[in-house]
Amino acid sequence: MKETYVSVWGNLVTVRSLQEEKEQGIEGKIEEAIAPLKEKIREIETSISQKYPPVKFLSEKDRKRILITGGAGFVGSHLADKLMMDGHEVTVVDNFFTGRKRNVEHWIGHENFELINHDVVEPLYIEVDQIYHLASPASPPNYMYNPIKTLKTNTIGTLNMLGLAKRVGARLLLASTSEVYGDPEVHPQREDYWGHVNPIGPRACYDEGKRVAETMCYAYMKQEGVEVRVARIFNTFGPRMHMNDGRVVSNFILQALQGEGLTVYGSGSQTRSFQYVSDLVNGLVVLMNNNVSSPVNVGNPEEHTILEFAKLIRGLVGSRSEILSLPEAQDDPQRRNPDISKAKLLLGWEPVVPLEEGLNKTIDYFRKELEYQANNQYIPKPKPARTKKGRLRHI
Ligand SMILES: O=C(O)[C@H]1O[C@H](OP(=O)(O)OP(=O)(O)OC[C@H]2O[C@@H](n3ccc(=O)[nH]c3=O)[C@H](O)[C@@H]2O)[C@H](O)[C@@H](O)[C@@H]1O
Image 1 (cartoon, helix red, strand yellow):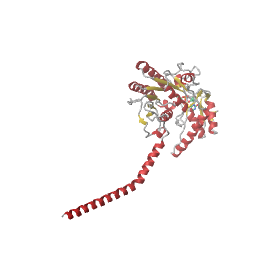
Image 2 (cartoon, rainbow, N blue to C red):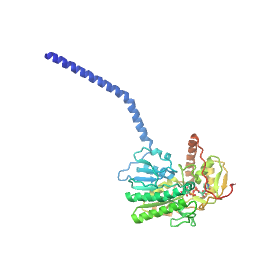
Image 3 (cartoon, protein in one colour):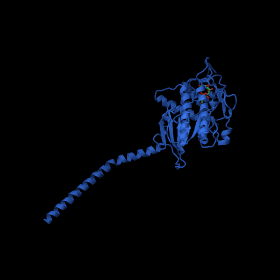
Image 4 (cartoon, rainbow, N blue to C red):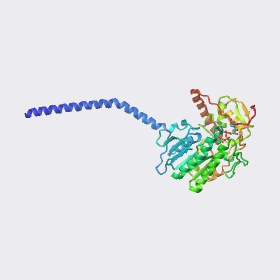
């Protein structure tokens, strides 16, 4: 009897160990089969973490939660790049009227980055430490396209962002503009000049919109103690400008690259002072983190006539385009040049990128964009301005 038990027990042990061996064998085989898959996943994970530009590590104490309205636009996306690379948590809000996902796609999926499709005309409830309020079309044909919407964005949109700043105790920087000086009677423009704006002209939706946005900032500062910064931004150019947004830099580069005539509005003797986008972005960040709450001009004081500018771009592109004279744009400011002594003195900021260097980078970007667009069967055309009546002439 005892022997029988022993032999049954022995058989059971053998069956179990055979079973265990079998299971181990299966596990081993499964392990072997999924090893290449695991390797693939590791590769994908590494390639994903390497796809982002390098980001600094900031401790919890130094890392800020930053909102950029209009952050998928030309300036906003460069600002997002800087703040991300500096190690902050960045939330971009854009309604994609003039902003484009392509401008920030390189950050999508990064743990410090968030993109929200939202129009600032509607309230927004999030927790942030700083707000860069850039949302608004900036190119004249774009802001004149729907003047009521431009007004709503700059008024209701700014009220909403100031309300948010008040609620969460954030500091707000308003992207104001040299256009608050209108067609200036004082030259160059200092921050204490009150401006010369036509309140019912075609540019008023933007000029007056930004002027009242500034007024709102100081009302919230005085009445509610909100910390505000106001940057009066002068003409800015660089990669990621919309090729056909109608501004002079994009129009002239596109026309020169396509061998079309460069469209100078009016005599071409009107002046502008152009800054490269990286200088602007550095200026905005310095201003945000400084204690100057009154408005500050952020621009490059090197002034050129538009005709000089057309010739310069044509030369840099190496194009044989002719220069055309079109009727003057309505209410076009005749001279624009920032006095930046305040920024130099109080912020220690001034632009450093030479005009030609910035233009060459922008021309390279446009060349690549044209190739990209051609592959997509789309040929961009410069957007015309609203001009006075008159005939086209060749200069
Ligand atoms: O580029 C910018 O950063 C600024 O552009 C605009 O200001 P504006 O100076 O009128 O800009 P443009 O449309 O680029 O025009 C500059 C000058 O070039 C002229 N222009 C423009 C386009 C063109 O094809 N040909 C041409 O002669 C315009 O009449 C104007 O005298 C906006 O008002 C600002 O908010 C914005 O910040």
